[in-house]
Amino acid sequence: MDIFEVLYEKRDEENAVNMAKYMKNKFDFLGINKPELKKIEREYFKEIKNKEYIDYDFVNKCYGDSNRELQYFAIDYLINKKRYLTNEDVPFIKNLIVTKSWWDTSDMIYKLIADMALKYEDINEILISWSKDNNIWIRRVSIIHQLHRKEKTNTKLLEKIIVNNFGSDEFFINKAIGWALRDYSKTNKEWVSNFINKYKDKMSNLSIKEASKYL
Image (cartoon, rainbow, N blue to C red; front, side, top):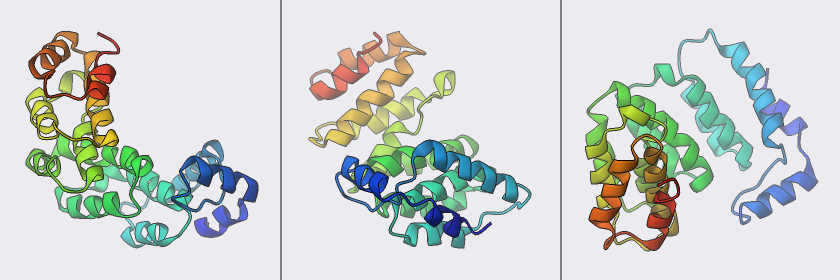
C-alpha cells in the first residue's frame, strides 16, 4: 500500500478549507476527516504489523509533507510501534515536537514519551529539563505526559514540572497545568486540592479553574 497515494486520493477540497480554518490556517490539509483517517490507518497498520522495527524514513517523509494529516499519520504510526521505542529515541521524539508544532501534534506525541518514561526511569530527568525548555510545546508535553496514569502517577515529578512552569502567561502552558491536575483529581482529589491550596498564589486563574473542575 502506497499510503501517500491513498491519502492524496481521498483529498476533499471543501473539507480541507474548513479544517485549515479550524486550525487558524497554520497548516494545509487534504481534507480527510478523523474517522476516515483512522480507517485508513487501521488497514495500513494491519499490513505492517509484522515489521518489527520503526521506519524513521517514513516518519520523516510524512513530516516533510505540507498536509497536516501526514503528521497525524506519522504520530499514530509511532504510537502503533511504540514497543520498539527506546530511551535513545528521545531526541527523535523531541525533534518531532518542535517540527511544525502546535497543540494538535504535541497532544498526540505526549503518549509516546509517556510510555517511554514508564520503561526508562532516566527519562524523568529529561522531562524535568523539558519543563524549563524555551519551546512551549516541549514544556506542554512534559506537563501532560502523565495523563491517565491514575495510581501510577509520580506526584513528586508532576509537582516539580508544574512548579517549573509557574509565572507563565502562555495559554497553552496554563491550560496544560490545569488539565494535568484535573485528570489526576479523578484519582486523588485530596492531593490536587492540597496542591492548589499550597500554590494558589502562584497559579494562574485558568490553571486553578481547570484543575478544580472535579473537586
